[in-house]
Amino acid sequence: MTTLHTQFLGHTLPTPLVLASGIWGTTVSLLVRAARDGCGAVTAKSCGPVPRAGHVNPSCVAWEHGLINAIGLANPGAEEEVGLLRQAKAELAPLGVPLIASIFASTAAEFGDVARIVAQARPDFIEVNISCPNVSSEFGEPFAGNAQSAAEVTGFVVAAARPHAIPVIVKLAPNVPSIGRIARAVVEAGADALCAVNTMPGLLIDPESGQTILANRSGGVSGPAIKPIALKAVYDARRACPDIPIIGTGGVSTGQDAIEMLMAGATVVGVGSAVYYRGGETFALIRDEMSAWLIAHSITSLDEIRGLAHRETIYPVTPTGAPIPHAH
Image 1: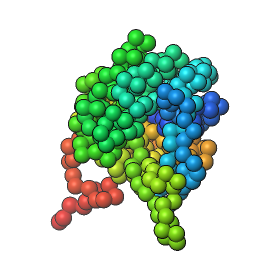
Image 2: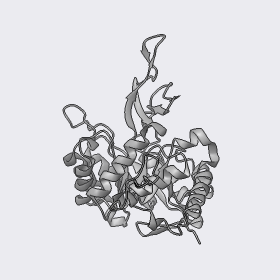
Image 3: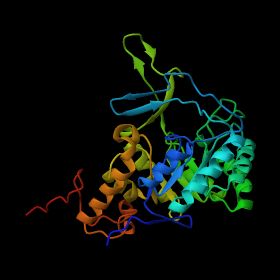
Image 4: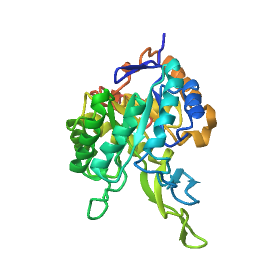
């Protein structure tokens, strides 16, 4: 019998699919809907120390190969988020689906402050969005940009979360020289798991006006275009941290995409922009496609394919994955 049940940080998830942060905000009914429709865990929208209105429209547009957005971390602030998280956790618990709270801040110490506030809601996990700019940095470099700053943030969050026994997940950025080095640094600083990866910085221009399309000019690219980037990030993070759980996120739109992410070394699979393309039934569709793939390949457990890309290749393969016929 084929099963999609997955172990993740002490929880048995009904499926390996995770609603990515920011897709359905922290609207409790939508988080519960994602859980009922096939998610094994759900992530609330990132919250920070104070309320933020975010960027003006246009803040998200679709293009030929995905989405690009600059929502601007709109949120009600951590204090207000606590009530929403408490309600969400209470409604998700009977479904056996854990809640991931997501946080951001502008200094390392402030990350700890936000984590301390959010911990009052007792989310099952705290995800740390380190892709936001570090205002203490001379050039405002994102915390995810180097191992030292990423580890510093992690240390503050872990210190705030540990008294409440809340595991910490650090969300890595794709546009770094060595994601493996940063992954090791945050794990050494106390991170319990990794999320790889966040969106890729990009920019679109309207050829008629010559102006950038987003009001913020640049934004984060997500969707099918970043799947190869995300797969490489997950692969590198797994090589760097072979025993650490990883949420593989980026460009997952189908069951086969999710299977590939597991093969790259992901423990579970984040799904976000696919909702734009496939609608509210996205998670159920991907779940069922995964099950169909496993049955078609006579595989009963995801453990049989997880990390498969890291195992020794016993025969050459074509770009489509089919064995290359031996020459006679």
